[in-house]
Structures are given as structure tokens and as C-alpha cells.
Image (cartoon, rainbow, N blue to C red; front, top):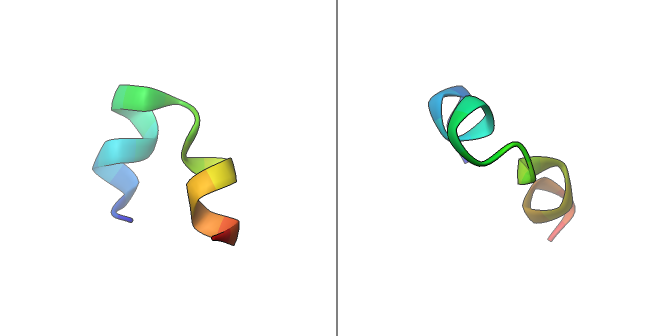
Length: 18
């Protein structure tokens, strides 16, 4: 996912691993 989504959700760390 994009870095922009990281700031929006803050839970991208989990999605990043998937």
C-alpha cells in the first residue's frame, strides 16, 4: 500500500505484511 494510506489508517503495517 501507499505511504498515504499509512497515515490515514495507521494499521498498514499489518496489511504491508500480507
